[in-house]
Image (cartoon, rainbow, N blue to C red):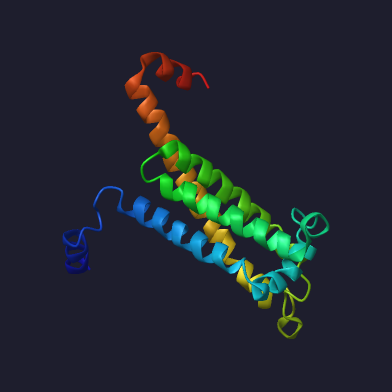
Length: 175
């Protein structure tokens, strides 16, 4: 095991912020592809069970319609992805992207308990997930990733503020 560890260290696995940048880039890519899908009818139709059973998004069909709700989601995903991308250079914009990302995945995770036919009766139901519930479970990890990016960006913004102004540092300590 020591040999493997030494190889990984030489390959740069401990390079400062490698994980942080890799996670940020992964989220940008995910938002690009997920947002892109929302412009096509196949995806708008595929989202119907999610919207109709989502306790935080059920209102979108009456307000925007099927296509409009899909477009709204696509624009939101591209916006959050763009803010996360901008977060490579501007941590305040990264915070906004991460907040949007956290909200996105809280919203999708809340659909899980309400999704019909999400648990396999042949396996005794819960926790034997199938179909759309299994698809949504990835969002638990994506929520954790979003929280990680939010934490990292808040830490970096607050650290930069402390370094630039002692008065701001004092104010941050009291909040």
